[in-house]
Length: 528
Image (tube, rainbow, N blue to C red):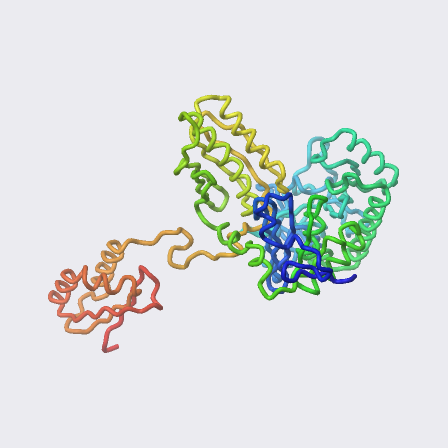
């Protein structure tokens, strides 16, 4: 495939290119997928629209147990109280397999996996985990949520293989169309085409959103690729010994094209020749209509800097997000909860208090939905809007949020705004948030974002000094503290130090040492 490059805002053919940041600010309906894959250790994909950065995805090369990977694992332990099994898939932590994610009656995939004789399943009701699986059993599982902090990955036996236009589900004989395709005529047409393809009767297929407007040939090609892939996986599963990886998701560049590139994307720009060739091969095979939208970026200026994405990425981690008209939202993230607080700030639009509150809440609703998607925050989300007494206003803000969250690729469930102005929702959590990929907890505060005050550090220093000194007399003692604490404490606690030195006949020297953590102290007797 010929390489089309972006250089100095012009193509080699001489026509003006859209690869100019000013085009974003001009109000043109332009959307780009920017792929920063030149650094092999980390790949980043940014989706940039008329209003700037819309979505950001980050992958590290050393991330082995990723969402979507398929493994032949072995049941390591069964916990009836949790109704779950822990499966060894070769990672440092076993995967978590809940009973609801186990294909009844015994995990599925007969003829592929070895089985031993099982007792009869219960006569009524869904069987328990210990009725379905046993310790040492071989299972085919797929990662549905990557390892988060100290929690192992979540698994399912309901495997799904995504293609460009279809999703193959070998364990469920179900045929359907994505719920995001809402046009009834389009849904009927796609279902009819799917039946004409005569897919294997024992496999399920779902037509993805990207399948809208596609003809029989496109869907047929996707179906053949997916069935060939599944046959290869099952052939390997029959002979491989667990734990072993059977299928690993494509790298971020290919996944981004497969999952994020639709007709509204004008350009796909990638900054690596190897990545450009890989993307071109994928487009040639599955999306030939998009070949002309793929460009190789060769400028010396980094791709994300050229399109002002780098600065937008840095702002992604700000605790407070200023709204265009002066209000703000404050985002706090914990292990399982995200709290978003809406403040008026300098927002003064409207002729009355009610109009002001309604306007800022609607603006905050749209920005909160964007930030959840941009930061990839998941779990339970609480949004504390400014109190609205009028139920119609609450309904208006709720509708604004639902409209803004509609394009989110993660599954969401939104509850109505309460009388206190609080909206509760859940957002599917598949992987670590973008912030946790970029940052590690501060060793001084353990991620709390705060540290002890100098007064508290000083009081604790005096207590520790008395304890360490004990009954020892006539000796020299060195106390090493962090530089932020050493000099202030040497001055502020001089009277207390002098009293201890006089009472115990000691000579205490305070030394600043950056190797000592803030809030800690290291003592040493001079004659030791």
